[in-house]
Amino acid sequence: MSEIFFKHFPNASGAVFHAFAPYRVCPIGAHVDHQHGLVSGFAINKGVDFYYQPTDGGEIIAYSENFSGMIGFSVRDEVEELKGDWGDFLRGSVWALKKRGKLWRGVRGVIKGSLPVGGLSSSASVILCYLQALAQVNDLQFDAQTVIDIAYRAEKEFVGVSVGKLDHSCEVLSRREHLLFLDTKDQSYELIKMPDTMPPFDIVIFYSGLSRRLGATFNNHVDELKAASWYLKALDGRDLGSFSDTRLRDVPRYVFDRFKDSLPEVFMRRARHFYTECERVRIGAEAFRQGDMRTYGRMSFESGRSSIDDYQTGSPYLVALYDAFLSAPGVYGGRFSGAGFKGCAVALVDPDKTEMCVEKVTRDYLTRYPELKDAYSTHICTTHDGVGVNVY
Image (tube, rainbow, N blue to C red; front, side):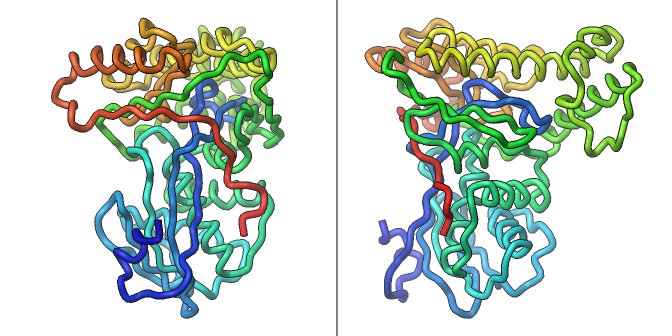
């Protein structure tokens, strides 16, 4: 695929390097990682590719196959502010990486996502591609947890989205035919191998035809969860600490059960989603371990319903896809992916019925939103390895 590189750099010569970071799906464990909750997920065999060459002078020159414009700066520049374009993820990667090591070489390259943007953690995939490339050309080596931490810092502290570590962890730690079961409080994790008794499944991505970048609305939901934690601590007579450091994981479930009726309704709903979602992750992980795909899928459906009713996210487009899953043939479970504003929904489907499922969901969705026919798409995926331990 080096022709993608030479299309944008026709006068270049020499070897072209390649970095890949998979997208991730999270059938159970949504909207809780920023509260140090329990999550689970898979990396998939679609993701982001970055084709690049080193630049000895430290120049960064980047093009995107998905967005317009060229991004240019130097690793020697002080990168301190957002520009409001797709290059902010590249700037953030340089900014975060410089906190860990010296950069003297830059890259010139082309980045390309293989699926439409929205709900598959494409921002984390993009950052991980940049980190792999910059680490390689600057002879830097990091273990898996350090890579996760650098990517997380780039997205949260530089780009300014109040994410947790689910996306970056899933895209680094995952392994093919394994479920990642992760505790985001201490980053302990287990890779649960698909047992021989597990029925096969396809991961089917349904792109709504609409994309939206995360921002203020997503951050507001995070603040509401933190406010719920703050309220519960106060009602239980606990040390409040600082608001910026409070998390619902700091508050036991029995405290919520005792004081939930004293919370403002919006905070009660957000907290109820957190506690029930963490329990669904536990049940789902054990079901996966036992090869019980029906229970795992049911937990995914319940996760989607809780995200709609209690977390109160999910645009009408994604709710329409979720509703279509409920009656589609062969669907074990599913929910919309990511924050739920626009973007994608994900279903786990019996491979023998994938074609029928896609036809049914597509018919239901486009009957409701015929104007999205040309933008809507479906993609059949499988589990995949993450970027690996040594990013080099």
